[in-house]
Length: 94
Picture 1 (cartoon, helix red, strand yellow):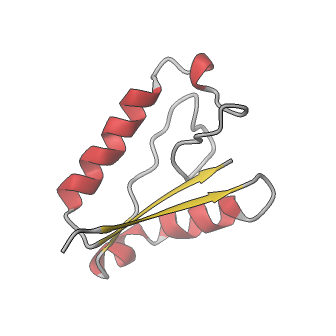
Picture 2: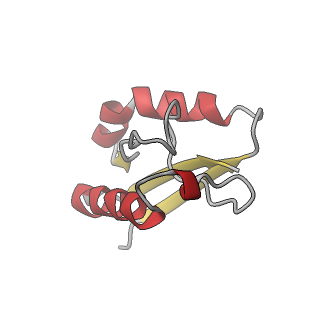
Picture 3: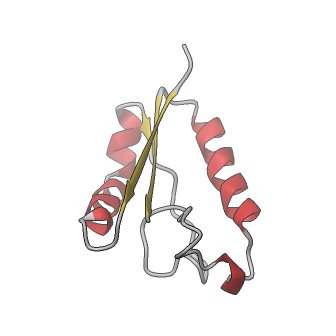
């Protein structure tokens, strides 16, 4: 059976950060239930967030981040593949 990927997105000020914070704080418990929430990466682009990539062209800060989109994407994909869990969750604002 193929794993399931849930992608959570939300506009700013809609509770997205609260959901990301919950998922991040409970990463180990989620893994024990078969759910992978990849570790948010810390960098200029993601500083202060507990989620993943913003895919919005309007709000993207990739042009200001020394690490590009491919770097972040590859880190998340690597963790998802290595976890080999049936359910995977990514979350981003915008």
